Image (cartoon, rainbow, N blue to C red; front, side, top):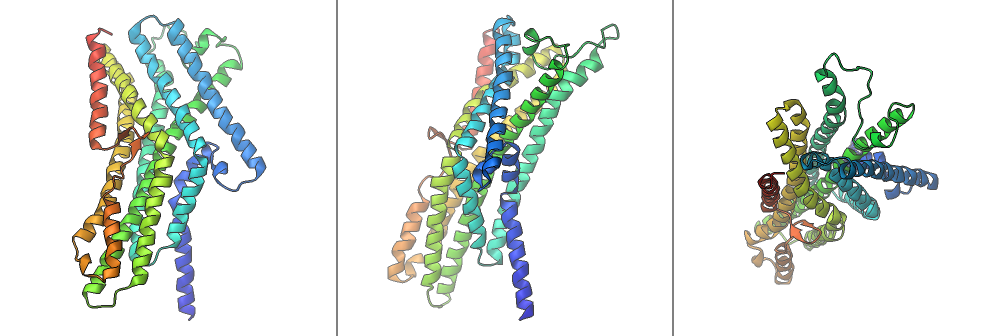
Length: 411
């Protein structure tokens, strides 16, 4: 008796641990951005502080984007230089749009995190737990790798390029006390050498960069967490169907209870996909697809220009940004394909077994599962285009096509 109680306690501890891990990265990044308290039952004071922090993030992003745009429009006359300076402005605009989209969907975040935690409480055996742990580990690993890539780009682009490289390549006759320009634009308005304007501007710039890359990581994490969880539930449903029909083929009594539980779980994951998953990432995917085409084109253009000038050190950050952007859109397209494949796999599993030999009053339910599994479940970019590997290749091709147009126009 004592042994069984001990096993139950250990099982509950393990379940609570995995519940926490399921949304660990999500809440970590949301709290960094001040959105976390909006998705929980936090105190009013906490939500006020969260609101102030969110407004600050948007304000400093708009502040820097405005100075950069004014500088490009009024002070830069060479079109090549304008293209070089345009990428950060576009990226800042994308970041602000993504951030407002995540804030707008904070109620959906609250609902899907509760849904995920409830699903962990529904685990029936070790096999189901292993399936969910496998998908959870994949989700956390992808988030970790993407976060490392993005923060590394942040360090290279905002610290190494503007501060370290000029010090290495400046000639000895240059004035070493001259302050380095933090970003183009603000120095045409402020006295950059005065205290504390330079220090305040530097802090705001680094805060903008850090929060911006965190927003990109958060949007990627939300997509990965949602899709991997849906896939884990579909894999469990497939196993339950397999177990149910295998037991029946062994002349065991057909379990209507297990069938009812499997059907309710299938309906639950369909609702999760249609009402939470697709709703949460509706705007994020649209912004991602549109922005990736533009940013990849500009990034490729900048790399070619630096290659012609043989500025190999400056190329490093642009190359990393290219791979980060490509990796981000590839993740979305891959998980869109994976989600549809897992839904179809449920129907294919039923088609591969003799479900029609089950009791007559159960066949209509199996037939309904097959029909629902054949419905398209791909992630779409704003309901305009379904995301797939074909879409990913089209985005890359579009970037190269725009690049060729720019080069052909002697830009």
